[in-house]
Length: 249
Image (cartoon, rainbow, N blue to C red; front, side, top):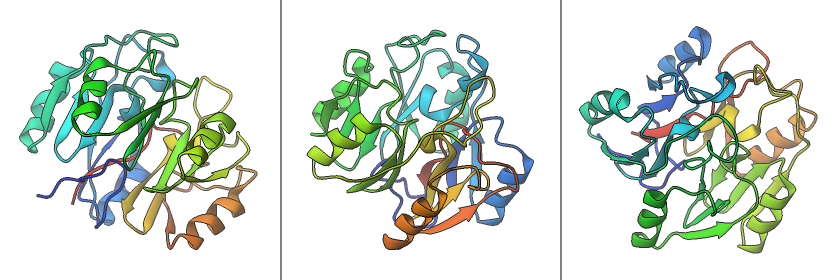
């Protein structure tokens, strides 16, 4: 088993991905057909329902086999993940229902950069970034990973203007899209980073069809320009599950 070295950026076909426990049979089956085993989160009772199983809310992938897990769900996820060879660190921040007490692990990694509201970043993540020389850049947004689709280590897609401008200042190319069109039950809409994930270096999987996203053609064309194929996992309208987190080949 080979672990994904750079978070969100596989260089081969994924074999294991972490997903929300509510991914649904159709999307889960489509991933299985693509050779991807899904490890599901568990409900985090301290969070509101819309995000209580989102991988990018309760887990942060540092790189390789290192995962930082919120203490709320650590004891339940540890046996499953350690069995697969992952080295888990229990985060220092206990998650609670409302912003900003639910964003400590929702940090956007793009290659050697990370973006987050640094007032709320979990200390364990900051320590790892310092050891690994990852540049943590402050933005006012706390849900940076939710808000952003990582295309490659120099490219992102987001509907958040400030994330886009800050990333561009770091030399990262950004496609800025209009918000909306993504289902997140209990909220007005979900976010682009929460409904997708690379399952290969050149395949971006989306939870459902993109028809209700205003900039759907822009997204598909932009990914195509980067040599990335779009894979739709279900016949449903695209929905936010806190990302498809690629972990091993």
